[in-house]
View (spheres, rainbow, N blue to C red):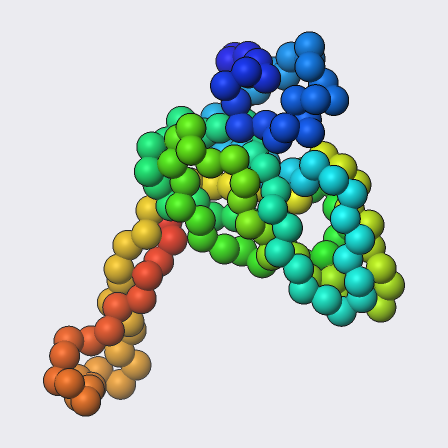
Length: 155
């Protein structure tokens, strides 16, 4: 079990100010949660991008990470978190953009320090697109079949 002190972590300045002498136990180094330091009001049928902060750093040097909804989120289930890829570099990330949609007809409030989503390290690889009719497809530039980026969770 690793203890994460406020000095040298990626916790936001507001979090440092409010809880100077507090210690947090960090047990899961495979993923991290993203939180927001201020109260936010999201209007009905609106999309916003919040700058959240990671609750602890994950020990991966430059890697691609997937932001995705989590069951540990402390936000209403009416909010949609758009899965997205972010570039993560150990000790360099403080703020993470989180795309949120309010699909309801009412204003929803997100409390300070509420968990918004989780960050999972992934590997981006190329995969060949499936050929449904077993014929080679000719493209304008006569190139090879296109490949799509794929996200694969790191073990």
